[in-house]
Image (cartoon, rainbow, N blue to C red; front, side):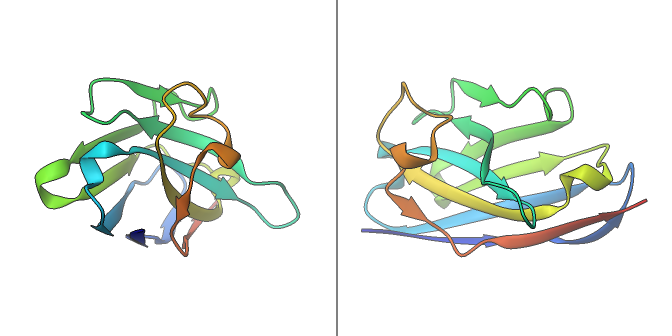
Length: 124
């Protein structure tokens, strides 16, 4: 089992920044791919970003590429999502997830463990 806890969400104005954290406990965190997903009211959950076991490979949705950066510090069992130039359309609940697949990182069903989510609200 892996337990995931997100933090760092909040209310920010457009063009502002936030850094989300995903803290893990349980099984060896460095064995897992970690992804960030988000879900806005009335919309399906969508892929945001993912990072490989060792952090050498990162993946981004087109909508956040160039604005968001995912990183991990395995010694701290933590993955970060730095979000810059935020837009109102980034408003959503953000979830981190852990899984073992390195080939389906954009697919939510490939992840085995999920956090409870953290709300990000971007005002215009």
